[in-house]
Image (cartoon, rainbow, N blue to C red; front, top):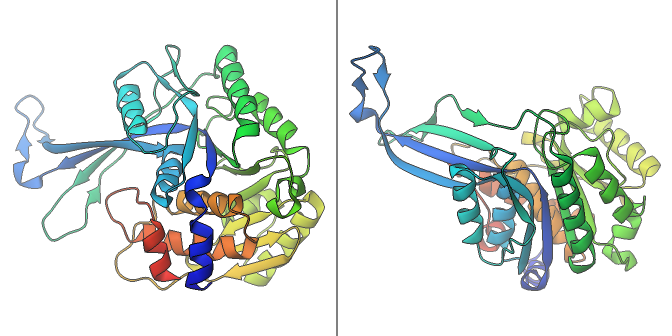
Length: 346
């Protein structure tokens, strides 16, 4: 992709409207100074002294932050948090992001805020070293009334956004935002065919792209993004070579009538476009130490933004691949990629 084409695409970004539906977490980073380590008088165990605390939106919030970094004009988070301290931190962080509209982000007294607490040992001259993470999740089904609120939010936004991203981040089915009732609404919007979601067809529906860490087996017919392990699970077979992946992704896309994007870690990204066949974009060279956290979310954000800007699937993959390369070189945080950073790698 040349500079002029990339500029033409990204010039559209400030006019785009994107909804990000899914599980939002509060990512709390606890920066530990090892020089201040003490021994507890009560337990005899080492004490980690925290000198800095950072809170930022994670999970679906990471996708949202990536879209902010790209300069998308209007962003609609659709999700929930608890009426707790972590929920306060999460909402404050979301509200401070430019272009974010909080009308459909729900506070619930019945839920805890999904939280990743990440202790980081900060040693001069060394990259941050993450200790065991401490997570807070909901282990009960999402209350029906809250599910109805989320479904109604999607219905009200469908005619007013250019793209909808749906992220399922929880491990236990039915305990997060993306329940079966919500997927039913997404399926109704997609009209059972993602060809209608392709901007080249002038469809009335927004672009819809889904991503789930539990797999896409029972998802409606939308565009989907997954990693290789998730794709192999969905296809029911191992794929040791790029050729195997190419054949499987092409076959699935032709039968299911959808665009499929599969991330391959050090081997880049491969996609199957319902109109133009398959395309493989190799990964860019590593330029130093890396941290892969957040790379997949950067890919999802860029795929959606590019699709909403009426691009070909091949163009989306090239840009998303560059964005992932930017993010993995940002250590000690869940990084993002700006338009300028992506352009520098294209």
